[in-house]
Length: 84
Image (cartoon, rainbow, N blue to C red; front, side):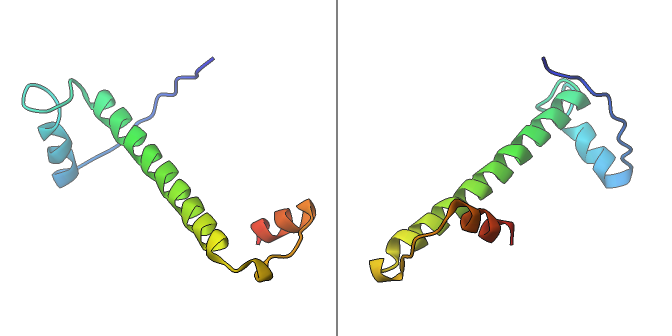
């Protein structure tokens, strides 16, 4: 079950003008809430994409290493290394 939270955001000056230009008849969004939700979704996707890209880079680096550099690790060692 999803939860709805109401938040208050105060904007002034250039930020307020920018939001106003993107909302209503002249903008891409019907209301400010729709605009903010879209911004949050896009930012969430960006964060997830960056995390995935870091994982891909780490895996590519690991697979490029010579086999002689591999050594067995226990699950506890992997967890401890990732916490560091």
